[in-house]
Every structure is written in C-alpha cells, then in structure tokens.
Length: 392
Image (cartoon, rainbow, N blue to C red; front, side, top):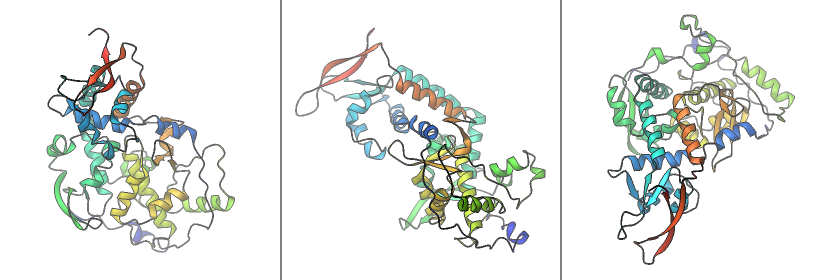
C-alpha cells in the first residue's frame, strides 16, 4: 500500500507543532458516571452469549455437547461458574436437552433466539450495511502508518466494529479492491503473523468525524490545522481543579491533528502529541457501533502502533472526553459525547438488534418450566434441570 501522505501541519505551523508545554502535575480524580455505567452494564454477558450462539449456528446439527462449549469459557471471559449454570440462567435463549440416554447433555438455541439471529443476518447482508462495515474496517487500517493490522488485533474490535462472525469469508472476500491478506512481523510474539492490509490509500475516507462536523459535511470547506475543540462533559459531582481546567482550555485551543496523519515526530511528552493521541482515540471510538470498547483493546492497539503509554495518559487526563467504567468484570472506555444519559445519540441498526438480544436474555418465559432428567456420560448420574415447552 502507498504510504501515508506527509504531515500537512508540520509545514503550516512549524513554530507551534513543537511546543513542549506539558500537563501540570495534578491528580485528576475518577468519578463514577451512573448513566454510562448503566449503558455498559446492560450488555453484561451479551458478547459471550452471542459467541456461544455463533458456535451453535455454525455447527452442522445446530447444537453442541455441553462439554465442548465448556472448553470455550476461558476464552470468553465468563464468570467462574459452571457452563451448565450459565446456560440455565438464560432459558429463553438456550435449550438444554439430551439426544438419548447414551449421549451427554447438548445445547441449542430457542426458536426466539433463532429468529433474532436470522434478522441479524439479514442486516449484515444488506448492501448498505456491508459497505458501512467495509468503510469502518478500512478507516481502522488507515489509522496505522502502514495501513495494515494483524488479525489478532482486528479480532479484538470485531464485535465493536459490527463485523459479521465470519467476516473474512463472508465480507472481505467480496472487496478485493479494498483488502488483501499479508504477513507482518509481530514484535510482541517475535514471529510472522497474518494481517489484513489496505490495498491502496483511500482519500475519500481520510476525514475524521471531528473534521466532518467542522465543515458541516461539505469537504470542500475543510481546512487542515484548525483549532477544533473536543466535546467535554462531566458527571454530577465532578470538579476539576482550576489550574487543571486552565490547562485543558489552553490545550483545546491547540491545532487539531488528523488521526490519519503520521504525527510520531512530535515530542512524546508534548501537548500536541497528546492532542493527536486523543484524536486517534476519539476517531477509533467513533468508528465502533457502540462507541465503546474494553480498555485492554485500546492498549493492545496502542502498543502495536507504538503509542507507548500515550493512550493511558489521554484517558487519565481527559475524563470529560472519555469515561472508564469498571462494570461487568472489566474496564470499558466510553466516548461521552456519543451518549445522552445511558442511550446512544445515534443508534446503529446492529445496536438495535443487540438491544433485542438483551431483552430476550432478560425475558421471563412463563411457558417454560424446569424438569428433572438424568444426564448420562459421566462416572455417576447427575440430576439436572432442563427447560422444556409445556405444549410439547
């Protein structure tokens, strides 16, 4: 792929781009945001359940032994409970059954879950949705210097980007003008790994959300190097020290550096380097359908791109732009401006589907009741509760 275009701001503002004014030595306290915590908590176990769903859907019999699904627990960050208890917790989503006394317990989806899966698949198959997913993925690759990322990094964002389960074969294969598979040297693992590469630099996509807003959508009016200010808001009870607020105000007035430019020539500890790091994080979160992702995903990408601890500093210094939630057994970074209370301002069609999945997860199905059956296949017989339909 052709390299990134040279930085435009270096020539335009040479005296300003090497400013070394740094963040003052003050502690910015973390204050919980109850609304954004709710937005994160709503999706408790959603990603794990959808991963199980996809495993079942792509099984020839549309079902799998409970024991084989139990092996996936360590990879899905599930709580320390048995797989049996996990599936029993969602009787409107999963059905436990025993094909015959000589076989172990199996798991399959309920008719309601299958219906939602078909509707989700229909959304993924829409031309507009496919093009949207391709643009998001292409812009993610364009945030890198080389226009390529290892698949293990991309897969960390697969769910948040709204990519289909088997996106390599069902999506990428139909866009050879955008993507190609290659190998890259992974400095962490010290070996060659498979990666996805952008075939060519796509100028029509080199516009960040911040820049798009600044020109009102008319790219002819777009001017590089403008002093764009990030939207900031704080939860009730949050109060920045006056000297910190003064620093933030001056920092906001620095030139906005496009996340699609290579700005590693800035002094790493300088404020301009930090504003660029914030721009990269802001654009990345905006590319995600839920406008949030696990903090470790961001750090993994930052480490691969060579940002070092810049992402950590950006999250710590700018709680009015990013919120870090400690809910659901992890830390999740949320783009504040994308939410009003606990609701997304702009809801992607896939987020609508996910809310329907959440409703099904939490739904109490009165037509189902637990019954005791004997499960075989272990050294001793164990009585378990299976959910069956009353009318069957």
